[in-house]
Image 1: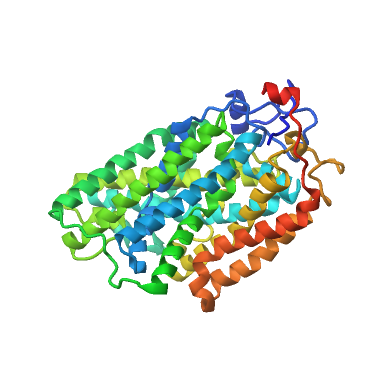
Image 2 (image 1 turned 135 degrees about the vertical axis):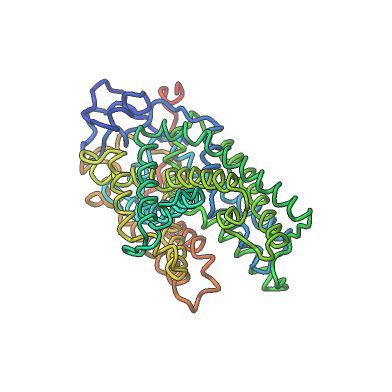
Length: 510
């Protein structure tokens, strides 16, 4: 498998602001003269200088995994009727599946050097790519708001613990469901995140390289402290009712499917990160240490702390913030709140801001740069009043269910199109041309086959995820959607399959 690399050019780019700084840093390739300004800017261009090493990808996964959501998710599997060994088997199997699928997504980005919405043009068409990009961006905007709110609660905890006297009165008045201190902390968290990403992907890489390990250290210290407090009385059988027979089998498979769909967002747009790696080995190895190794270890820490909380506090506490608040030490609360804020900033930037930045930039590259796209997402994230969404379990349940139902089909189309239909052979220059004779123009810029496969797969997946009568199958909505989309898209696109290309001299040299 191979790609046609983009032609070199010395023509300058006219982008300003963050895009200009990104290009000036040497990370982004200069625009080719034939690239359409409606499809290209410095941030969407093929990457030229690939600076992300194995550790950078590993640190990125630490940022994503070391979060309250993963902590709570891992602990919650024990309440599905599974014992400790069964949960760890389910986690190990699922994270190996995730590792394999993430490699397919990341290597597509590494081979082409383009971000997800640009890569999607080869599957959905140069204009049709905005469909998967906007679906991914919508989900990211909602998550961005929720995580910004969660991070702001850490700031709020620290301020109230310091007890300067003037913070407590700010918790009384309410405006749109949030008191004054809540609004102040939310605005502060919102601003901090924008300051981190203001200088682009290189600044993000440097931030996550130290932030991910910092969270690990605090979580490990928390685990040791809880084990000591529990006097070593730790049991990994947290479920009050052990499942047997078919219920056990269903629980195990459901746990595997849930964990895979938990990473549904990253599976779609991991090309955004894979493209920054210098070679395929870097992607595969970084993913290995960041996913199977890191995820299983973090799950062990999460479950150990949750189990110890039963002995120490008389109940299973799956929220680390609540756990930290129960300590008697002001220092521990302040450090815990600080690390929680750092972890939330990290996951929000990696999982949500970056995707939105590229996805919105893809809509109007001439007007929207990477930072402007992220800024649009940050503004939009406030509109749903994310604290209402987070505090409404029914809304969260439907949102998470819809997550897999809509992202699974996108992943199925994108991966089969790149690896099976096109055999990993993408003409990068053609991704930036709006010529009617272009390879990825299809029908007026849209690929009907990809859209048909997406719709055909999304309908049953959404029904399984959102209709209460099919609740027993909801955990499998992502897998079913991805599978149906992959089969349908492959079947109706097979006649247009790209022949296996013969290597050219330039490709051999590369």
